[in-house]
Amino acid sequence: MPLSEHEQRILQELEQSLYQQDPQFAERVRSETVYRHAGRHCAWSAATFVAALLFMIFTFATSVVLGFVGVLAMFVSGIVFVNNARRLGKAGIDDITRSIHNRNAARPVHDPRDWLRDRFRRDD
Image 1 (cartoon, rainbow, N blue to C red):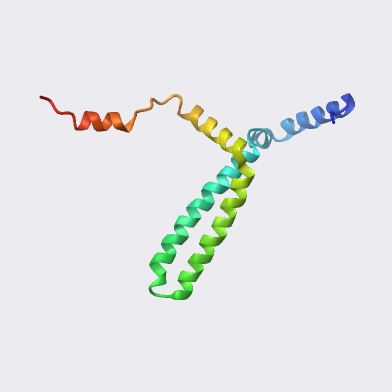
Image 2: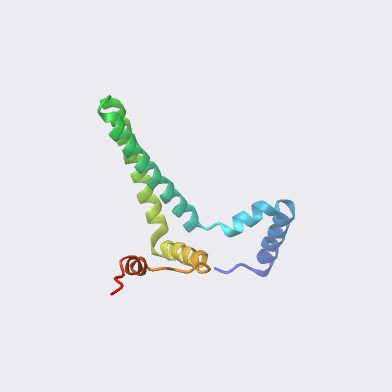
């Protein structure tokens, strides 16, 4: 249901006052999306999973309890990852890949196969 003209005017006034009072916060809120937030949590939970896996591998031989703590940390980080991946969905993944593509657009892309061909080229 669309907003009335009065409601739109009030919303614009609130937005302008927010920009005047705290421009850094307003810019951060404007640029932040649900997809970026969920993507950031997915990245952190994946890093936590790897760290917990390493912790479990190195401590399981000395203490089963510490190894179990690593397993619990892996389990929790896996749940956080799945929940945020669901929040991302296909639209969020498209948004993230589009932003990565735009960030990397200035840099030239080199195919690893070209490097291998150049490296192992036979001069006959």
